Image 1 (cartoon, rainbow, N blue to C red):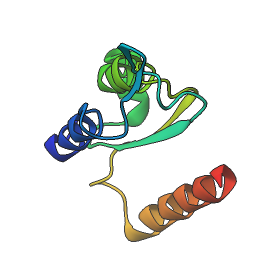
Image 2 (cartoon, rainbow, N blue to C red):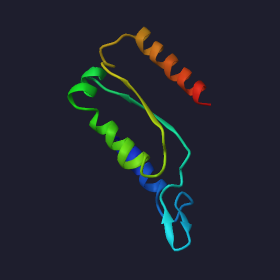
Image 3 (tube, rainbow, N blue to C red):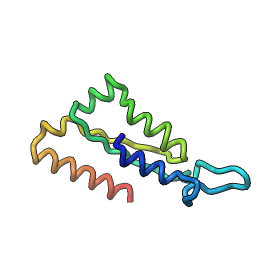
Length: 106
């Protein structure tokens, strides 16, 4: 996971921010309950190989240990692999796909 994303999540979950709401004497970590997310990953290796051989370990970590922990469910994912090896047309197609996913979610 990129360091800037880790920093964003850590800052978001700091107790002095509104993201963590006190419920009596205990803090509720499920402040994002009822929210959903889509994680879009890009990588140099083929996406199917990452899922099959590596078990999508970083994606699972993000889903289970961070997003599900704070109440975000469901978490959908999209993986684009071999990004350095494709041409401009394929990248444009991927951008259109991601844009369509955004329109579907809104």
